[in-house]
Length: 241
Ligand SMILES: C[S@@+](CC[C@H](N)C(=O)[O-])C[C@H]1O[C@@H](n2cnc3c(N)ncnc32)[C@H](O)[C@@H]1O
Image (cartoon, rainbow, N blue to C red):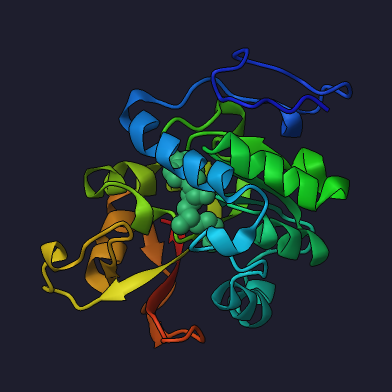
């Protein structure tokens, strides 16, 4: 297994088995290079202590778990291909693998990917460095299920539409995307939030994915999570038209 310290490593590297899952990607797209470095720095500075990564709690996202329990069985076939974008420390990927999905996670931060591989060495090949805004060609239209937990909300606002389009591009025909994000009211101005993260409104979330050619399977869930204090979240699933 080749593990790079940097997304500026060789444009394409393969592990000994040559499997696509272990391919490392070239440097992030110019649009994301600055903030991608800041994510990487958070993971590096944490030095293996997840308590120092503000969004990491070393468990699968509860809103994803409840969606997988209640809605995935009627929508996603057993063993389907799934990808988690901005996979962080990898818990959502491992949750999907544990349920029998053929799951991969990618993150723009090499430090996050290295950390995931250290945490889950048996799944090391399922974690790759890649930029959502410039997804590897081999991932396009490949996945039955694309999961975003807290990535769109943490991107510069000007990149949200591109991010939603990129998520849609990873879905195979009739594929499903699930997005979980901080929530705000429709019409509540974004400049009242000091992001990142920048919460999404339900209307905005639907509009982002509609513009990317996907439509919501039903109204977005709008709820308070189990954190202390509770945080308002949105969860919505989308399918290709
Ligand atoms: C708020 S964290 C959430 C991480 C993880 N999904 C979780 O819930 O713990 C956002 C993650 O998205 C990653 N990320 C940000 N921009 C990205 C991009 N353009 N492509 C891939 N990953 C990205 C960051 O490195 C970070 O790990």
